Image (tube, rainbow, N blue to C red):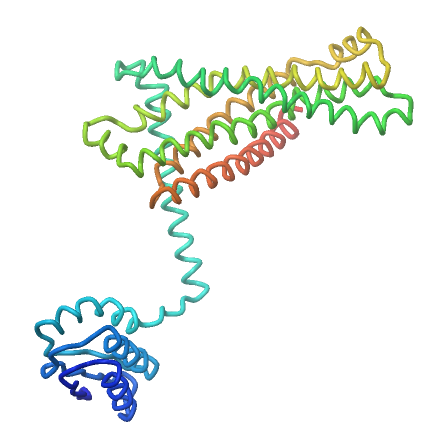
Length: 361
């Protein structure tokens, strides 16, 4: 298709640009047609003249055509370099409509790629945490102590308080029902069994996910954005060995301790309500609590804590290492890590519930 040539006067200003725009609109530009602006005779142009060129480009785009130019030289060529990004943006075609199946396929491919990356991280983490130290490949034992202090010791107060308040709340709600039947003493059994099997592990995992999981994701994401991860690889260091393995081992060691603390604080919260509100003697409450305590229930909660710790560390590291962009990307990946941690904690807890219900019990 032959382009429609439009000559431009020697000076492209507000007035001549308006006239040029009227001249362009008089042509019958067809779908896929080309409007060629000839700047070979133009010696000067200003910002308003460039704005009229943008208006012509928009008109050509609306008619399904495009605008090109030739012959620019000197000051006009320099000005066209400034205007060119705007002209190209004006001529950019509308994005093609993507159908449902294409969106579904794209989402499936991206999900499969992310799952593959997570599985690779899981294998590397297990190797560098469990197998490599016994084969003489080395382990950062000094960093392990620092991570245990950060993840465990510094989480004691918030974990104790959250479980204590939860135990107080559970005792309060259950007592409102059991007191009507004169069975207030059985609140001790309910609190003991609930925290041993379920509540201590889940509440502790949620606290750790919000605290430690977010910190891991933010730390690694910041290192990725500042290209520190690339620097480590450039120095020949293995990222899972250097960054992931100490965090994974540290949290799997301290998590059972935090879950145990959660059990004790939750039971203490329930006892406070039973003794001071329900007027049950402390020794009677303790005897009822110890009578309901079973080792298999306690081991069940501790066993869950081990898997919750693994999920929290791997999800935090996975999201931190996948960050894109700057500070906004760090914030998005940190939020994503916490959301995924809590979701997977509930999923893993549900799987354990199915296992203990159908297999063990």
